[in-house]
Picture (cartoon, rainbow, N blue to C red):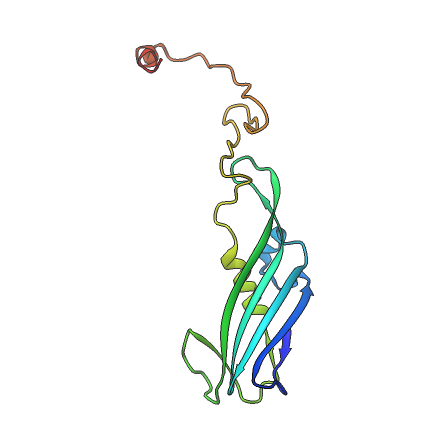
Amino acid sequence: MKISIQSLKPGVSTYKERIKPDFIEQNFVRFYPNDFDVDVLLDKIDRDFRVRVYLSSTALYVCDRCLEEYTEDLKTDTEQIYKISAEQNPVDDDFVFVSPDTTEIDLKDLLNETIVLSHPIKMLCKEDCKGLCAGCGANLNNEECKCQEADSDPRWEELRKLIK
């Protein structure tokens, strides 16, 4: 998504667009197959631009415990300040520097970074997901375990009595 800044007047401008997920890093594409609704608030202050981006879509995840696919609404936002600077390589992690002859701002990298940072570390279909049985592989959310209590080592019987 590119925004023209060439003839932008000072103040807040808004942009809305529905975009394909082709901006997403390759490792994350499978989780976000649906289009994204992007709302942008661009505030021009002198020669600087404060960009606030709101993203929403439906994500397709696979539960880490039961391996079932599930969908989840994704709503996230981020903010970035773009500064116009004639310096070749200014160093400041808080801003993105653009040259004075720049006519548009490409938000592709910002959108990708926002998705990657909002991606869940642990994907769970529900908070109390019981997962799969390690013995028979049954999904414990939907069915009972089919494992038979294995023949046990008789040396552990005295300890089992304490548990019961």
